[in-house]
Image (tube, rainbow, N blue to C red; front, side, top):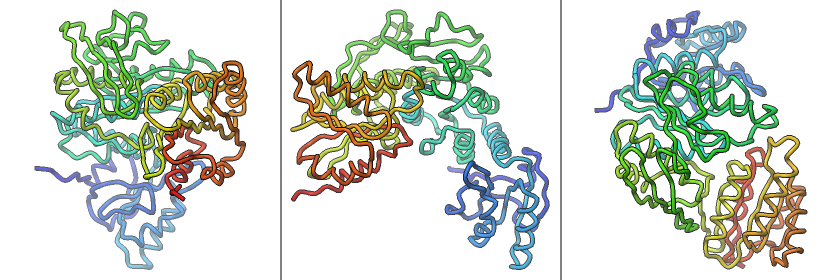
Length: 478
């Protein structure tokens, strides 16, 4: 039987070190929210302060919607809220803390410790969310597993994910992202995973971190609190990851295509829209299994192998994991095929970096279509090698024999120029178009895309390429 999650107010105050300044509301609450537009009954509101918004400005609005418990870090806002409640005969609780973001993380730590599940944490330069979704699917076939929330992988996102767990969760699957050194360390300091996974370490974040060495250090922070009974699982096909060179007291398991991997991947076939298949050999048991995945993208062989290895670490056989992956539910905007009856769209618009673009282009080239079209925005974070990586992607599109490449926005002029030059030298029929402005592209899409086209859409998150997907799906037959 499902047990309701319940937070006792006094227990929470003790856990986070807050001060109860108004205590006229209920003595408990069932959940937490941070968006004033998403007020839920019997939940507490944490007024977070971000770069552009201060949620303390919305306390009265949240109060009017029925919320009775508030965690605030502003004395002025606390006084204002107390007066508003008194004047409107509202019975509320106000807990004053030094920092609402840190207070919410402390509450999440308290909640995670009392549930005491097996904890699996995932990080990496690419594939984090898909691997997380796969591990969730695998673990759910045997255990009550904490459900991931959207793309939440920051301190705030991980806290919100954990705080949503029911009390009977047996396995917690937690995705951890970062923008700078120390971020992952700060999260795993309280999560304290039993199993950590690194999907890949590339050069994403080079602009923020300055060197590949710093990127490696940042991702390896996920091991900072592993002890001798814990486990690190790595993708050894990642350029900087090798179980023989990592120093730590924890156990290490590797997946990849080399002979010394604990889970060796071989004979992978990309069937485009229909998915992929590969063989996976477990070194310890010397068993080889066939893995058929109904999801596109050859890069997903590594994500699936990581999930299978994690499953076996918690007592789920590889065969059981493969079966569980057949019904995988993925977070959106990741190699998602959509069809409006006129054209088909490969929506891979959530993020972009060279390895992922090449894999998506491979899947596009392997899928039957009248014309294969790639609409690519820029890849951010590459510092002084940005021009080089964009040019290489442009050349790769031509090599794969696509019919049309549309480049849009910052950095992609280099991509378009390189693609155009290669098409001319190779005698390729691939056409290349460059738009500096996404809005111009969106307006012209009905004139560029033809019925029965298959269109890949991809770009870094800041370019919001889902707007292009939405416009494409709005094209109707004339």
